[in-house]
Structures are given as C-alpha cells and as structure tokens.
Image (cartoon, rainbow over all chains, first blue to last red; front, side, top):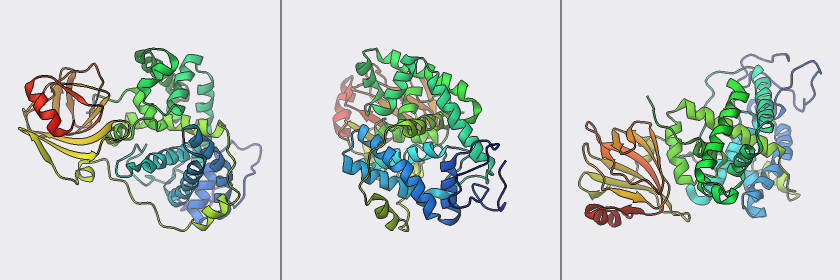
Length: 208
Length: 201
C-alpha cells in the first residue's frame, strides 16, 4: 500500500507529489494516469496535466482520425478533451473508471456534441455528477487491476467475437451495417456481440 | 422495475460513440434509470479506453500543448439537458391526432434520424405503422403496449424495419415516450396515412 496523504483530500483520497511516477517494486500497480487526474483535482497541477496531455492527446487525435475526422478537427477535439479533463477532474472517480476509459468517454461525448447535438442528453455511466464518497487511494490500484482484466479478457476472445467488438468501436456506422462489412447477418452480429460481452463480463468480474 | 433493456449491441455502440446521437439520447434516458445497463456501458468504456491506450498516436502541431495550457482557466462547458422529462420537455407540444401530441427535440439529421417526445392519452392507440429503419423508444411516464409486449417507465423498446405495430397507451396517466426514428414511418391504414405526413414522421 502506498502512504495515505491527508484523509480529507477527496475524491481520490490521497495526495500525490507532483511528478511522482515512480513507486517501490513491492507495491501493486496503480493507475498512474488516474493519479495525474487526481493531482489536477486536488491542486490544479499543471505538470500533471502536461503529462496527461503528452500521453493521451496524440492517441485521441489518431483515434478521431480513424473515426473519420479531418486532422485539424481531430487535433482540436483532442485538445478540447484534455481541457474538459482539467475542468472535470474533481468529478473523476477511480473507483468507477480507469483514466483511459474516462477520457475515452469525454472524447466520445465531445465528438457527438461537435456534430451539433449539444442539446441532447448523452450516455453517462453515472447519473450523479459527483462521487458519492471519497473512494480512497485503493481505488487507483483497483482501476489499474480492472483495466488489466479488461485487456486480458479482450485478448482471450475468440477471433470472430473480437472482430465484432472492434467494428463496434471503429466503424462509425450503425451496428446494423456491420453485417455488410463482415458479410454476416445482423442477427449473427448481435449474437456474437452478446456472447462477447457476456464473456467479457464474466472474465472482468465485478470489478468493471 | 425495468423489464426491457437495449440490446447489448446498442449499449456497446453507445459506449463506442457509434450509435446515432438521437438513439444514444434515448439510451441515455434508459441508463439514468437502469444500474444494470450502466454497468454494461462502463464495461464498454473500459474497452474503449483500452483501445485508445493501445492504439496508434498521431503527431500534434508543435504549439498544441502551449495553446491548451493557455486556455486552462476558462469556465466549464455549458451543461447538457438532464435525461428526465423536466430536462427535456422544454419545447411546445403539437397535436398530431386525437389524443396524440408530439414535441420535436432534434430535427431529422444527415443520417435520417430524428428525436421526439410523444404524449398519448390513456387508452389511445397510435395508427398502425411500419418502419423505414431503426426505432428506439424509452417510456418516461405512464405505459404502453404493442404486439411485442408491455412497456412501463424506464423500459426500452427497440424496433426495426420488420416491426409493424399499433402501440396503445395503457389506462392511468398519459404515456410519454422519447423516440428516435431513423427513416420514415410506413403508415398502414387510412388514419396512419393521414397522420404520418402531418407529424412529419
């Protein structure tokens, strides 16, 4: 376990020295990017922000280009995503989402908004805006473990199931059209997705 | 007690951001009331996070970080409407038939999908119709029934081209649903052929 900082420091439950990426080998891995978000929440840590930006902005840009954005629009949206991370850092709850998942969801919603849908409600994993209770520093370890299990679970999917999951994320078309991309009927797409999700849910367990 | 949920494929598309926004808005209304589907969404977002982490990078312009750092202290973005009736029903109801009113939330988009609230008086049935594409419905108040079953507050109904139905509001209070419709409705019967063009559906 890492040393607890001030107990009243919410929502991440621990303070993180600026730039403290290192940890003793004996400690369980924690979500380092989650720790950076917490550092922003706790003290507006600009160095933590720069580190998050360096990691995620180029990945977001590539992701958005892959979804069909022009390069300049993708860069603008990647910047907006990180700006939103800065503004909403206090709402980040590592007990609920890994840093990458949280940032992915922010980018997704901004991308939908950018298509002039800002007046529509969008899917949020949690209806409440603020974490219910400070989850404590363990949450960063739990977030890393959950992300590891999702990775392992995805790697273990049969190829045809992994393919429909991948298409769901990277093919910017209604899932009804995945059937055309794969040349299999819609019913098969849906049942493969159902199988894939059931398997993922079992493999990831209650942690996700 | 919610009994009907979006298909797993729709939840995953929602997490991925590949579901058309009006359909995603209907799913959002359901999610606000359904912890079970929120878990599935969360799993989908973890998958998205992993794909983002393990995916390729694209070089940013040299000034990208400085530009963003200079904007860090700007105010928060404008809030989105809450996925509740009070948050959404801020427009005007338009009567489109006996006991049937419509409030458009988003006009038909480039993909041919529009988003509406529909309010149907107790006991009134919509004219029998088919669909030109996918239809997502979530009950926000009251209840309705059609050939596929009964739907109450929070329940989610998914229909597509093969579905032909005449949903009827159950007795009690008026039934209000949020509905995303892709493509045109295909009216069956005289009443539907009269109502559909009036409603723009």
